[in-house]
Amino acid sequence: MDDRGGGGSFVAVRRISQGLDRGSACHSTSVEVVAGSAAWLGRGLSCVCAQRRDSDARPSFDLTAAQEECLQRLQNRIDIAYDSSVPEHQEALRALWHVAFPGEELRGLISEQWKEMGWQGKDPSTDFRGGGFISLENLLYFARNFPKSFQDLLRKKEGDRALWEYPFAVAGVNITFMLIQMLDLEAVKPRTLVGATFLKFLTENESAFDLLYCIAFKLMDHQWLAMHASYMDFNTVMKATRRQLERELLQEDIARLEDLPSYSLLSR
Image 1 (cartoon, rainbow, N blue to C red):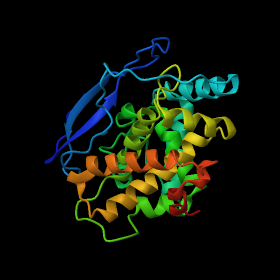
Image 2: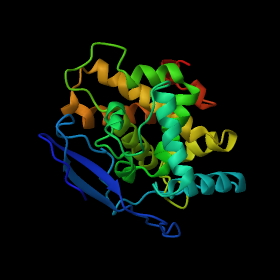
Image 3: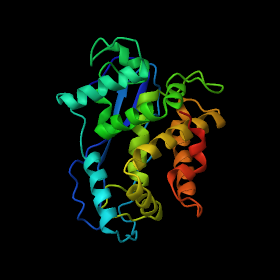
């Protein structure tokens, strides 16, 4: 782990499990708390979903063949770590810059410019450890499908903002990580009703995870403003966001993700 110079410190969670054994009936995810420093970030920005009780006995839900196939494809995406030496990953990162800052030339994949988007340093690849390549894909999907909401959050256009705001890009990686854990996506089959419910949406829409990511990001910012939060409140806001998403996913009248009440927060 590199130690960047700066005043304030931050806390982030890095998921260090890759190619996990999903055949285990009692699956656990390895997480590592990574401490570093960044003057503009402050303390306390961490994924709030790292805590797990391995002794919890949870039921599992049987899947249809279609659900198993869709879950496996999503799990394959989750297992891909961001690799700065892979051309496809490089191009995706460049694409993210161009949709975020159209017309502004990117001087390099390692550049101080990346801090404008809310990365912790000049090399975004160090921040993708928490969510993998899928967290970059989530950001790209958000930018391309809901450009107005993406730009509003990136530039903090809406509401009475705090003096110390959450950094956009790092928050996005945390949201990816939170959703993976909330939906129990690294288990061989869902062990929560929320996870089982999500798989129904995934079978009908292979972009369901990306769409739920957009909803979650916008909902998180909505909660942030409603709670008059500052950077020290990030974990509290993320917990509130997760609880609200879980409640909405379990409502009886939800036939698709677009029916979630929080979907109405998004704008294209």
